[in-house]
Length: 413
Ligand SMILES: *Cc1c(COP(=O)(O)O)cnc(C)c1O
Image 1: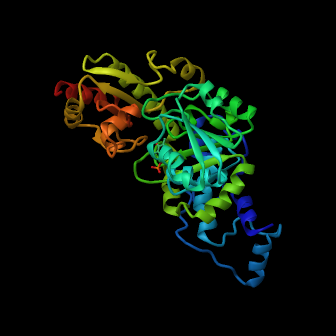
Image 2: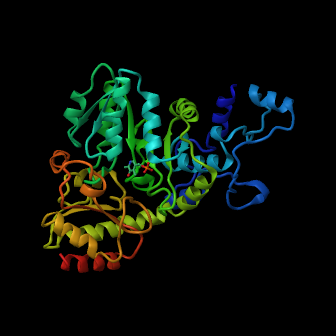
């Protein structure tokens, strides 16, 4: 066995497939953990080291040859693995019902390293619109340097998705719940189309979280997250994760170790700590977001609300059938233009104006300025990003306080 293969063996979670524990809160705290940690520590320690040592050359030779006698906890160099990172990866794999997981430096590192690894020069991919801005930029523009082309089809149009597949198509890419419009992917149709055409499926499950839906259970090949958002949950780290079956994870790990967008032990520790409350946080955020969405829909100053838990949302029925909860992001348009929207945002006293989501603190984003500010109004119109669109990421504050804050800000418009 090569050194890299051995690292993969070390990183294989103890529990494959469906996790040992049924409840998602138990899983958030315990899934994939080693019961006996160093010094019988209850908590996974932070191994703040860039490299590891060998007693002698005989040990090096054993490690390099990957003999069966090798200790399963042997590491050699930080980019190829670290015990704190492995502990985070085991939790992530177990939460997503994956065989393996790779922790990387950011959500974008998960997306770019996965696509660079899976797409050959001259290849093609099909993706849904209403996507994270930089994901689309990377697919449509950056990948052109490898003659890789990308078809962007309207979210929810499965005939267009299938029609866009060509002989050189290698994969389909979509978010499971999209941002900012909370479109919900029909995973059954998405996977069916991919299987019929023998192409891979990659989804960004950042907004849905493994608490509300596990795409691997629906036959998706690879699940990516910005762990910066709900998985970390505390707005204090940047990380990404790639999960799936070992046959997909193993070659991707080799690519990540070479491309270098790996994570670090401190981030892995914070992520493990954050994930322990994932189930509690998401349950509260689902509930509060529903209450806030219903409140917004009854506001005379609100034009339209996009939340999949509302009957007015185009994917309401699909969401009811497939999701355990509809997530913590609510998007809406204000009656008025940019000026009125700015006045509303400036008047908020609880939610912060900030470009992230999924954490404990409620955050608001003026999508046109903060995510698409470099484009002309016309270009934004083409991308369906109006000047009166607000994205609200619900934190874990009480619903009544969030609603009271919105209410007083609406009066200031
Ligand atoms: C934030 C986000 C990303 C990018 O993740 P980073 O951790 O910021 O690199 C990708 N996809 C979605 C859906 C996101 O919300």
